[in-house]
Image (cartoon, rainbow, N blue to C red; front, side, top):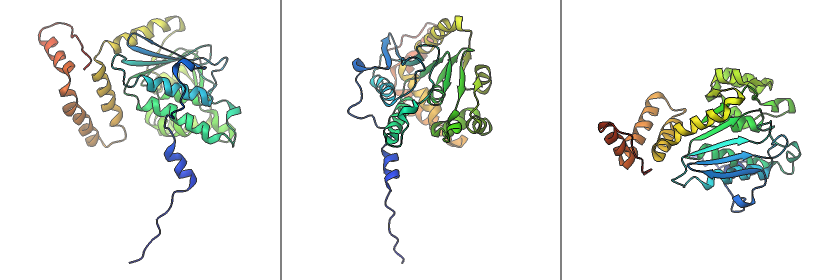
Length: 284
């Protein structure tokens, strides 16, 4: 029998495997510089605040990750809301950070922030009231729900700089389909808010003067539900992505039968229906 030498992972392999882990030196909420963080009732609110373009640097990305991770185990927080200060949602990665010497640290922070968005059990609502380019567009794409105004624009211009957006290359085909994903990445051209709504990148498109009311409406509808049930519904939907239909149904039923049935809120919902009253959630 021929013996083959086991391939040792090279330096790039090892680095990629280690990306996306929130370090022990992650910024504490009280020390945030570029993200305004607060919890109001059942909503954790993160606001990008780095004038004037909300350009993403390593510190800002780590603050996004830290803010999201800080509420992942808080039972009284049902939803995360991400929006921005100023007229630009985010102009993408700050080019000064994108140097050969710092590329790994930047990619690590970038991956950590987006992993936090993808992995959090809380529904994430992203509000876009201005241009969202590069990494900013990827932030919007990872929102579970997205509200935009006609001021919004979405673009992945990396191709014009001799690069491509690795996250969007993987995520956009799920949202837009492969043809539109290829168009978006290969041309680098901006997409209007209207087209983003038509293609499914945006859930609601509202005039700017109606934005606050729409955000309040959506937040109210989501937070009116049981927190654990929201978590399980999100898990069932996103956990089935990419699976064949039958496997996806099995995955969803597994969550339903093995996790949902043990919740007090699940029983309360049935009792409330029978008794013709509004349910009183205990969030457990």
